[in-house]
Image (spheres, rainbow, N blue to C red):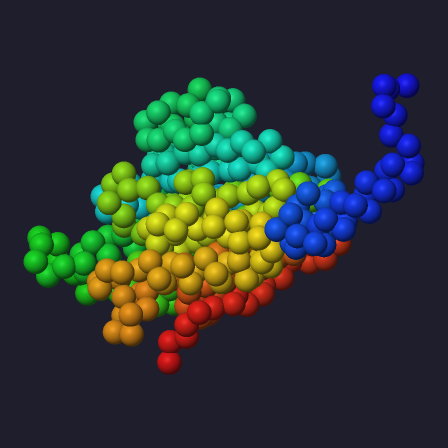
Amino acid sequence: MPENPITRRDLITTTARAAAVAAAVGPALAHAAPPPLVRPVAVSSMNGLGAVKVAVERMVAGAPPVDAAVAGVALPEADPDDVTVGYGGLPNEEGVVQLDAAVMDGVTMRAGAVAALERIKHPAQVALEVMRGTDRILLVGDGALRFARAHGFPEENLLTERARKIWLFWKENASQNDDWLPEPKEIDDPDIQWFIKKYGDVYFRPTGTIHLSACGEGGQLGCCTTTSGLFFKLPGRVGDSPLVGAGLYCDGDVGSAGGTGHGESNIIVAGAHTVVEFMRHGSSPEAACVATLERVVRNTKLDYLRDAKGRPKNNLLLYAVNRAGEVGGAAIWAGERCKYAVCRAGSEPRLFDCAYLFKKT
Ligand code: ASP
């Protein structure tokens, strides 16, 4: 018997006292309560309907949430029709596909990330290796590629014919003051038509990316964000996606969050971390996303980033889950693409509308 055995009566008194303290101090300390039992749940950006399903299946089969998240995002990473992630992702300004990804595990509070990684289809899996196989967090460029090679990841050309044509079309139409001339016939090309149908032709640099946050049965949390980054970005540019605290963050005591959209806006408010902090202080996942986006609006001070009414021109979307399995999503701008995907164990994945701050009239 231990020196100070805890009796059943002590336990009941202690638990009742803890509950009374939690009630008195409010939700900010609610994370001190024992973990709830939740149906495993995954939330992601709207391109993750298949990914959230896979993530939940993996959790039900016993995988930790961070591994489940990486398994889920492998779908869009391998899908040439998702031009915002992995294989088939749109390249940088020079026509080179450079991928960014990160993972975070709320159980161990460890993270791993890669940025500007070329020729590897599944950067999220490399990020997981960085987390588990090193005591570092972020590897970039050639170092990240060498690390991936050392771990046996196959190298391949990630630039699909469709992505190359879309890039060339952008390049030839980007300016009238360079040496590139638009090729009128290109607009009829089925691949260019496909792109315009999906993303419109007003602004040729829409965003995508997948973030996925996963919550297991005992409230364990893990997340992952993976992307080919801003379309036609400057070579070497790294966005929010692989930055812990911006593109993703989770805290095992609180919740998990991540973002897609204009990366620089997200980095400047440490978006995912801020969402988690709002949840720590009692906000629901949706309210936490909204409050963080309001901060983005306040921090968008440069004229060229704002419209005539002073609102950010760029969109940013945030997604979150807390350790009770509640989910939410929000965007700066309403629109067709302002949705998030959710899957709970035992149910089919579904898209939900994000809360939003502004709507274009
Ligand atoms: N957030 C990504 C980045 O800035 C882009 C995206 O979400 O599509 O690289």
